[in-house]
Length: 319
Image (cartoon, rainbow, N blue to C red; front, side):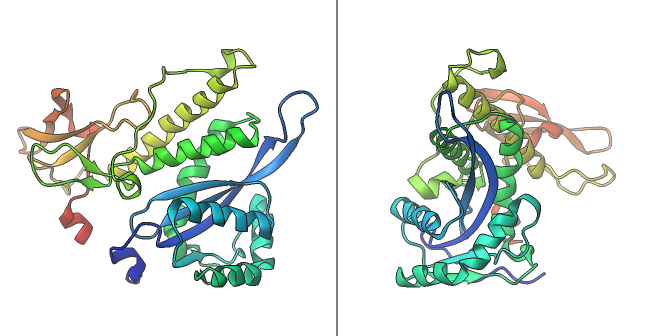
């Protein structure tokens, strides 16, 4: 495995070097009411190479003008990047074949527009998606669950744009590492800190279990149900990534007192990550701890280690 590129390790402003990828298509309604028909739209993902911040844009079609307007919206809100990394579209298959055709046919016009704006467009080699693993992972997090939670729901362009913005906030709220090593500090660093300087939060809403029982005209509840469904699916997936379990035959990762952990809770509201610090460990007869007391903002709780997800420390990130 090669070394990480300099854009991944040298600190600088967020979204100065970004990775770009498309996902889709998503079927949406061209308008509300009777006589509407289904049309395609696409998801354009920008990911910061340094801080893994994610920006999602809805694209109406795969034309050069639509992409240029998408890029202009991104620049207006996130600032102008110096370089954009993208695959050349030849590794797209199946439903994304039209995306690959678009990128191949417009590679030179897109590069010319970017060079006029002082942006360097860099295409990775053909059939080498692992060169763009950082944006492939972002597409997986967004598209994988969006396709499943939307199901047969036909949203309008305005509604799917709102859904993409809310999903973007969910992805940017994930805790990356502890803010400091102080035992009393229960704050974590998230991609949202690099975007707005503070954690991303959401308006409190009651849990909506099933939008199919709601009135068909109440499209807001339908959209909110999709957002909460996405949160439940993606939250569990992110927790499982922090807890990479192998065969329980060797004690490879030892939890220490003072480590910051993320508590795995089944019914946490969107953008709510319950963090805490390990206060006490309870070793068993074999000397291995499987239960811990955790200090949280709502008091001390006792949890098994299988429900605790330790955040990466400075030593882990450097290793």
